[in-house]
Length: 141
Image 1 (cartoon, helix red, strand yellow):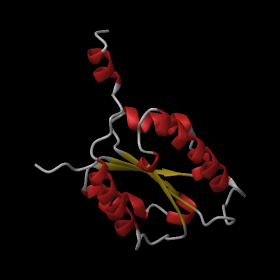
Image 2: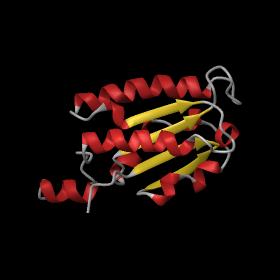
Image 3: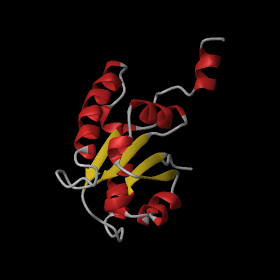
Image 4: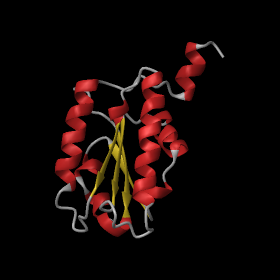
C-alpha cells in the first residue's frame, strides 16, 4: 500500500463554511476541524496535531485584511512563521504547515488545495516527529 500522508485541516467557518467537512480530506487519511477563526490556532494546536500522527497541517482562513475578527489570520500567519523556524531547528520541514487565505464557502477549491498539499507531503515522506508512545519506546522510558 502506497504511503498516504495524514493531514489535519483547521478551517475558518466564516470564509470556508463547513464545506471542508465533506472535502476530499475526509476521503483520504485526515481530519477536518472547523474553527471560529484561524487566529485561534497557536503552537500547542500545531504540536498536538503532529503528536497525534499528522504528516502535515493545513489551515484555511479568511482573506488577508478581511478577517471576521479583525486580524486573526495575520496573527496566525506571524505565529506560523515562528513555529516553522522551530520545526526547522529540529530538522523538520517547515512546509509541513501550510495555510491558505481566501473565501470559498461552497468548497469548490478545497479538493485542489488538499491534493497539492498531499502531493508535496508525499515527496517529503512521513513526518519524523515521534508520537509520545514511540518516543517512550525509543528512549526506553
